[in-house]
Length: 356
Ligand SMILES: *Cc1c(COP(=O)(O)O)cnc(C)c1O
Image 1 (cartoon, rainbow, N blue to C red):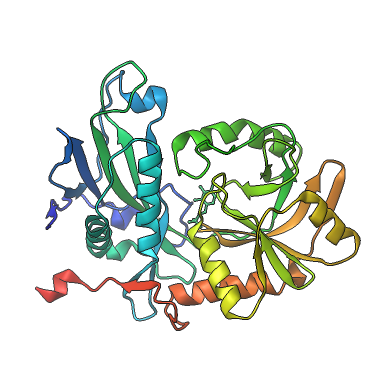
Image 2: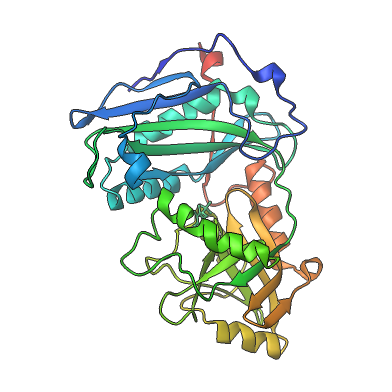
């Protein structure tokens, strides 16, 4: 398949201050677009970023049939764009699509779309260490119809945003005791819009209490830890690393999987399983709670400096963390090509233009 390209005649590149890139606000010149109609994907195109016009009866606006992905292209120190674990993102996009009754995107086309788009807008990948081009693929229903049923037509789009080094201030978390994110049989494992809409109110309440994010708990007893915002969560206790297992209520983070692979490779014992707050409180009490950190594409690894379970507030000192900073620099090392890619996770985007 070859993707038709319509180049921009009005690049906004020269207007962007690449030393000051607020996350998610600057969009690069081109986007990939492909419509699903008459039961099949139509011809894909890469074209200048433009607004869509939306009908008032658009199904997505009313019933939320919509999914997304998030990944980053970084630069090798020789300048070549690098993509990280694209296969995992393709797999998850299609798992989300399946759960939301949406059509699959062929993995080969997904790879080609991203590689072509990143190649075309390669100048938009910031050069500074820790910067990246954030890639946002998403799909939404386009039927114009008021009624709850799967849409017949869809739009699949990929656009990109240059992002600076994610300001990695440590985060404070509060274990949620009233609201839930996901329940067995629900859509917690899908990267679908409604999960995030549903989180806004609890997070607003947590912010009013002085916390950055809520830590989601199981919906029955509020006893077992799930995850945080757009991060999976890890606890280092007594030299071992614990993280909740993927039981259908937790988003299958690519960074989570990356962390587990690296830790296993480094000889750590990683325990994936039900993780209760009692276990964490016990470790805190007997002095074996060493580190708490989150994993996600945007911030890579986030250090947790405060964690509240009801009235019990645990303070942690990220300055004393060893494993979390090691993981952060390991993953950033892979993304800049400085660290050997021993797991085969990196794909170089060679310039197509130069090959002509
Ligand atoms: C995207 C996301 C994550 C992190 O996934 P990565 O693939 O590591 O970026 C974790 N939790 C939720 C709810 C998410 O949406």
